[in-house]
Amino acid sequence: MEIFNQEFIQKFIRLTWRNPAFMTIAIALVWLIPQLFIRKIMAKKYEQRKIEIQNNKIQKLYPTNTPK
Image (cartoon, rainbow, N blue to C red; front, top):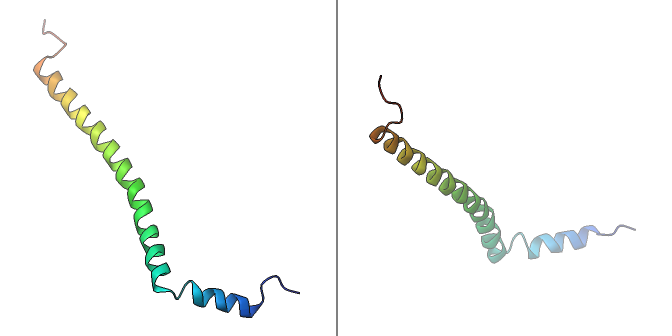
């Protein structure tokens, strides 16, 4: 005896995957969740790069090596 017979599987597919509301939510989740992680990583890299550029500009204004 199978745990899930074919009739149950077909009914499950019909009620979920072919349901427009379910598909809208599923597509939105697949689209938005990775985007949130990528956005967070990109924002962190942007802030680090911004600080690095600022430090480079400060170094140009106030060099630590004095000519002899």
